Amino acid sequence: MPMVAASPSCIFSIAAAPGGGFLWEARAPEEIFTPEDLNEEQRQIAATADRFAREEILPAAAAIEAKEPGTMPALMRKAAELGFMSAEIPDEFGGMGMGKVTSVLIVDRLSILASFSTAMGAHVGIGTLPLVWFGTEEQKRRYLPKLASCEWIAAYALSEASSGSDAMNIRTRATLSPDGRAYILNGEKHWITNCAIAGLYTVFAKIDGEKFSAFLIERDTPGLTVGAEEHKLGIRGSSTCPLVLTDCKVPAENLLGEAGKGHRIAFNVLNVGRLKLGAACVGGARNVLGHMIRYAKERRAFGKAIGEMGLIQRKISASAARLYAAESMAYRTAGMIDANLARLSGADAEGAHEGPQGADIPSAIGEYAVECSIVKVYGSEALSFAADELVATMGGYGYVEEYPAERLYRDARINRIFEGTNEINRLIITGWLMKRAAAGKLPLLAAIKRVMDEATAPPSIDGVGGSAEPLAREAAALGATRKMALFAAGVASQRYMNELEEQQEIVADLADMICHIFALESALLRAQKLARAGRSSAITAAAMTGLLGEEAMAATEQASRRVLAACAEGDTLRTQLAILRRLARYTPVNAAELSRAVARQCIQMEKYPL
Image (tube, rainbow, N blue to C red; front, side):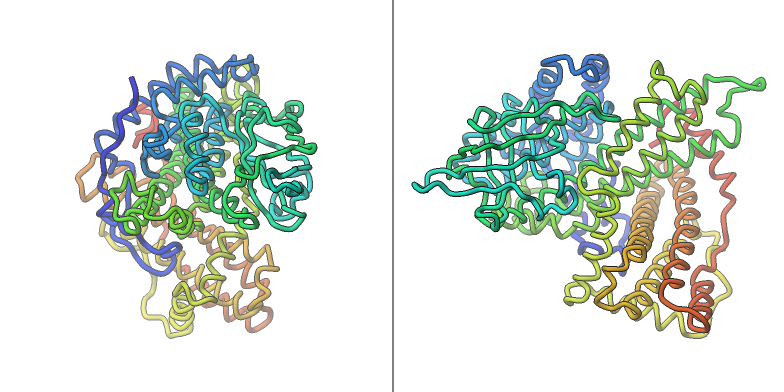
């Protein structure tokens, strides 16, 4: 039965907050979107996706991993029949015309097998959205219906052997034919997901070796050759091949967007790619945690279930808390994007992606480039953490192919490379904020100045975090981490000024602090929202937020120390460290007690508790 289109949710109550605004301004719980805000139609979509994952994806896992011919395309077409592959394609081109929240929800719920979620993610995201956003009317009518139904599967060909992260350094060349009717492309692309099963490729090349541009190339185009499958560490069931272009003749009308403006396509689509990859990691981590909980409940040692042991409970609770933060950030970011698109277009939230003008869409989404990068970095590392802890929980059983932990562990690693490595994304997080602040587009410098002034003023309190108010300790931890990060950013900016971007170690430490702030604030606001609604899950959410607060405080103080030590020495450094100690004052929580509470709830429910 086809999936129903979701009606407008509560997006209109969600604030279209400025990108990166979590660093300098507080938000109220009702201003953010959380999974609990999904409307009835979206919950039906989630249930349908969960059922499809159980009944269609998992039974096909062995065939997918063995790359049995036709298995992946057939499964993708089944998903397309339910509307899962066309959520963001406008309805006039055979799609469902939904917003980012619903598309994130679909990716989240279907990410139970990494090989399938990789193929799906490449198709619905970087493979299809460039055409949705930048295609001509004729291009959309020709290709989008085929992509919506998965008659054709999409692939995105940007990377080359010498230009993975350095995307603008591609060597593939396009030359306009003498009659002006076609472009002749020569070059080779690497690591192309869906390459062997795709019917349409978005390929980037430089016209005359200079103008960075994108082209739509059909599979049967003469001069286009698909190379051999790569033998990969993980996601073995997804297709990854090189794409060779030898005097490949592409009709001039298949130029996507404007000549020389391909960077707008490449970089803007990656923002959504990062958000959706983060959402896929949320779904993957939920699956990993489920395996961990079930094994801990069933496995007995020393006369009891290992799930009763404190160190196993710590693995469960730490994995659950990071999953909770990643999930909260992913849905919060999707909600902000939908709210911003609705504000710009005047449409309802689910149709907002169509916008008044196609050019508005990438800009509206690009407002949240930092949040998208954070969701990708934090989500991929949360999944890797959980997969590692699953192997540790299962011991020897976790290390053999007969059990799922081995594949889950291998599959998790690629997410820290996809859509820009986590190292590149860390540079983006800090660099984007600092550049926009320097250009006067963000009030970040004013926020840094306020913290610097406060830090050098006489202390007014002895400590923070001792209030009996619900979640007061976690709110204090958020305030402290925010101040430490802004103080460290201020010191680094004063020391290196315009050369700060060259200090990659400092930039990465600042990015880690920024990630912890967004994670903790998203978790805290969601926990407060649950508590105000009287939800039974509020207690567990509060406990997980407490664990995140402890982690954020420790990690931010340590990173701040490294930044300060890289910027000063002697008396200046000692003075700055004294200020940092003042900013880092915090009454710690009993993390062991919180860990046990979260783990007990997970084991009792036999799943992730939210």
